[in-house]
Length: 346
Image 1 (cartoon, rainbow, N blue to C red):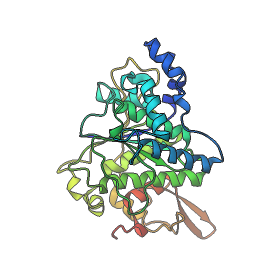
Image 2: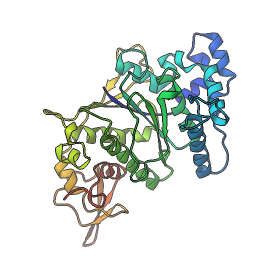
Image 3: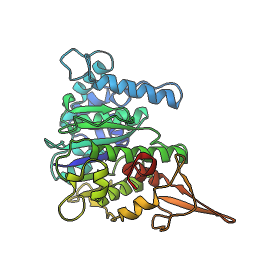
């Protein structure tokens, strides 16, 4: 059993807009071309209004509740539109090459791009209309069009646990993932760190189930940060997992199983994706160096060791004063571990 974390981009929307490039089935290509499936979510308003409206649309389309696609009641509103579009575009029979996300997933599993029973797939998407809609279509393809196996998590508020993950594809909306500023990006990476933390805290994992990160889709600037998060997962030790209530997940030997994969866009005939090298972090040093930052991501002075300087934080020297400032990855790593104010034991 595996936890699949998939960064979502726009490639599936491009295929829905121009399906003839991906499909040999001319009838299906024609149906998709006239379906409007690549622009189902209405657009309008400023960026914040669009994000809220898109999230509400996906929540209504996927449920839970009466009228949601896949529920016992006849769908209405967004659920009806999505169900009608899905019947036309038939994601259950799409080839894996229909999107970068599906293709990489299929290559890693060396078979069809369908989520195996008992596995968990997490689709990491931006809070934009295209990002959320692309995640919806990738999710339906991964489940063979089974709406009952697709869930939407609009946020990760404090105290809110992830649940009903097994055998499901879960869409996780990450605010500010399409970063317009450095601060936006730092917030988004902190959110990714909380996501990794919630997965370990969820109680849904019973053993050291592998975490596989798929990085062929999605916002390219997030790739090094997702690699860093994969490294953090691989590096967790018993102390880290004990703080997450998941000490039982630590393997008896070796490191926690985690991998990261990409697929070159012209490498469709190659036997498999490219596994990326993942470093092992010294988690004792990580906990020590990231402990004393404030909520704004600053700390006076410098840690006694500086192994993460330039990676998780930057040191600024002005006259006789030294200050550390968290990087985007440092914010994510700190949120993952829950260091300092988040309650990590000293």
